[in-house]
Amino acid sequence: MEAFLGANRLNWDDRAALHSTDRTGSYHIEAVLAGGSNLYELETREVGDIVGKDIVHLQCHIGLDTISLKNLGAGSVTGLDFSPTAIAAARDFAAKAGTDVRFVEAPLFEAVEALGRTFDVAYVTWGSVNWLDDVFRWARVVADLLRPGGRLYMAEGHPLMFQCDRKAAALELKHDWRTPIARPLTWNEELTYTGDDRILKHPRYYEWIHPISDVVNALISAGLTLDFLNEHDTVSWQHFSFAMRAGKDMYALPNNSPKIPMAYSIGATKRSVGKVPYLVAPKAIESH
Image (cartoon, rainbow, N blue to C red; front, top):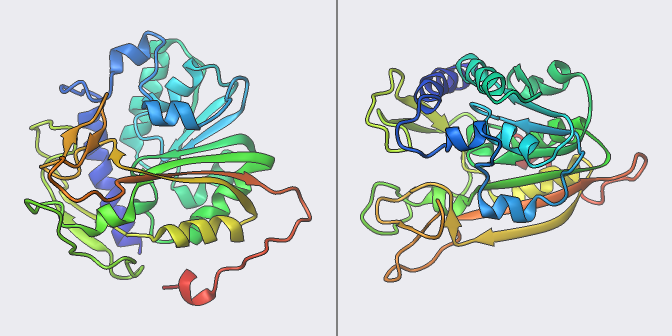
């Protein structure tokens, strides 16, 4: 497993170097540094009241969303990522913005020990659990980072979208609905998703498709109560070459294509201490 995650870290080091010097405008760097936000309308609408809240942004990449949360009125904000290149860029952006945001370099599964505190809100968006081999372990990390009554907000690409062949000219199922931990999807792609034409030095990376049922059951098993589960017909990147712009910075399938959900979002709250989860996920699923 370390080989997969190590390859992913090298890939994300490369991406962080490109994204932190973004030539495409995808990350809205200047707007964020000037006190604005690069969060999508979907996230801004669904995340709820964050004013004065202590927030942890997991898998924060180069930290621009993290800084945006602070700009939107959050109290303390902490970003965590496993890429040293990303964290260095995030700290540089925070310094340039003159904002008090903490960034910590650590793998997601070591977040509890690395951060050493709990939070009101865990923020997890766009390209998160597909990079992790075990969503049940991920959910336990999220739960351990939240105070009783603390909330998770998550927005992610839909697993059905990930099952489709993203290089095909039309919707076409290609991958199984659940990826075994030991047999991840393997990719070799020299370009990143922003449209930047600079080449990645480490093009190989690995991903896992996790059914929404696994994600939900993992959160319930970890002690969270589901507040909402929404599916969306747009996603925040051009996953398919034939996807079309849909509003500001989102993409949807064209009118002549069958429609599938492209993204989903979850709100969940950590139950008070002493309450017993009503569902425990079977070990067969957890260790799949």
